[in-house]
Length: 185
Length: 185
DNA sequence: AGACGAAGTCAACATGTGTTGGCCTACAAT
DNA sequence: ATTGTAGGCCAACACATGTTGACTTCGTCT
Image (cartoon, rainbow over all chains, first blue to last red):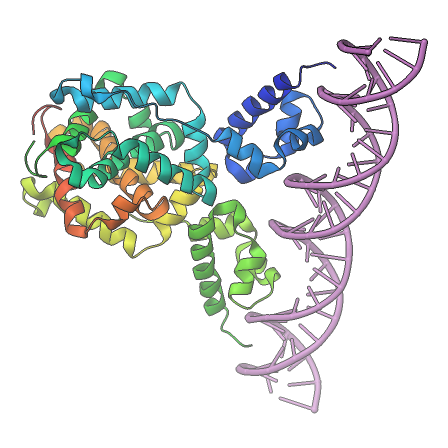
């Protein structure tokens, strides 16, 4: 027994996350993942059943949104942006979902679930009747940012500093979450 | 000669656009496209050389941004949103690029070129030194909207009316394009 | 020491893919 | 009528992939 089973499983999962995030679902092959861990492809099947199983294990992702109640209302926008940036730069799960969610129906559904449930429930109750709308608007801006910065790598967006992003996009989220109507800030 | 050559080529291209937009690059097969047109797969090769060639032909897309000079400065944001919505709902090219740009390096590069060149050149010269930054911000919001609405199909975003989208996102673009600094509107 | 079970390897199958080259067929010009 | 040519079909190759089952190795427990 070279490795301890659970260790091997964890190593496979880590390699799979990297490959799914970098190449998407179809272009990621079981053989390549196995080669990354220097084992036989059949081991991947043993531990995860099939490719879909491996993907499901690699694609779980939690927004881990903080409790916004403790944050002054006028800083919610900035706090959200800062949190998302932190979250995405420390967890490949979001990249996996973004890259694959566009061709893989399962990933797409999971994305819907995450951003619907987790985001909607964190919109302050001030506009509870419009919680879905507000969360949706936030999703368009934040997913668009992730898309342009981490996947498409548009130069102007990649070159923006963290502070610039917070300064420019914070007020947008602020308006989406708490403004009483679209025109008012 | 059942069909007129150029007609066949056009039919293949139309079928390819639909399939690439719906399934992405890898999952779109030459055989399936050929079947859609009720033709032999080898004809696709004859007209487009190889799969990459077919994709390149299917993925050309032009923003066709109107001349913003004729629009009152305070309406630029709304005008941009409205134009994007029109453009996307009448041309599958954008969906092709979105679905494939995440796994296909060629599509990713073309996306960079389109949104860099075409968008940057249309940002009013008022902030020419920041043209890249402004265009990048606009791209994050508009691509995020397309992603959530047409690809991920997040329910709250799909359910938004055209007017709601313009009302909510117009002011955001307005600020990105012409605001003197992030905090001012 | 011997047996058991887990970790791991090997070889192979079935399938789907892009791609190729040869062959057929019908129209139009000579 | 002959011929040329362009549209179209067929069969096949070469290759990669997900997946399977049998076999081997090696540590551990009795």
